[in-house]
Length: 326
Image 1: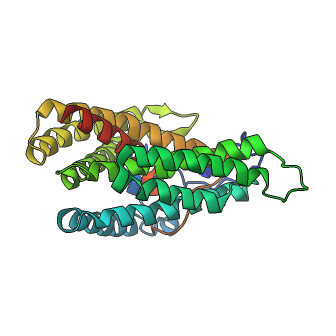
Image 2: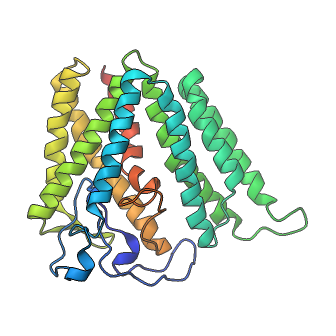
């Protein structure tokens, strides 16, 4: 999920929130630990000896990022193989933290996101997916949308006139859909008899996309993909993501799910497309907010949400493809 970070490369003032432009921090674009579907083109100017300090060309602490990434990955694999139902709780906790990170950043930009109904409703979206399936997700989502609309209407009491009501409510609903709703599709995949293997397949393909994008982007990246949003994402990195993800799809769908290899090809291509889109969406959001990361919880990565930008839309596409074709 190597993405260009917003504040590092001429961050623009927020068009949505009206927040003041934050000062840019040179050399912070890109994310080696999050080497997404189109990875960072290396900086033409090398860092000075005093600035290197274990950081990769894309500006992150690579050793710390690798340790955290491997630790999280091994933990999730162990959960999926031995106690898959525990993953629902892991997803719920991760989405609560990610939602809080996004809400905190938005409120810093003077967007009054109703945190209480957003957090509680997001948890309902996750937990109701397990016993009730898609109907539980849809019901919890609709109820939370209504709660957000009412809460923001009376956020300052019965006598105060709400300011920026439409903007704040729309952004709150966007966050609800962006984080817990998309995450609920990972829970829905678990409902199948081989659900743990479906989720494992989805996770492996996201990693393949990340690794392929980072390697190809660093080694061969010369042509920026969307310079207005993410200047250090390259078409070469996108090609690497596509190659690795298709190979990963062929192997995982054939070996883990015992299914037709062409489903693996379709899944690999679909995941790269939505993972790239997810990267760009978060890059643009952070650019408008004038920030580098959503949080600081994970060394070398940023916040929880900085690890999920490409995984969340990928969860939806994985559920859609595997449910329709298996």
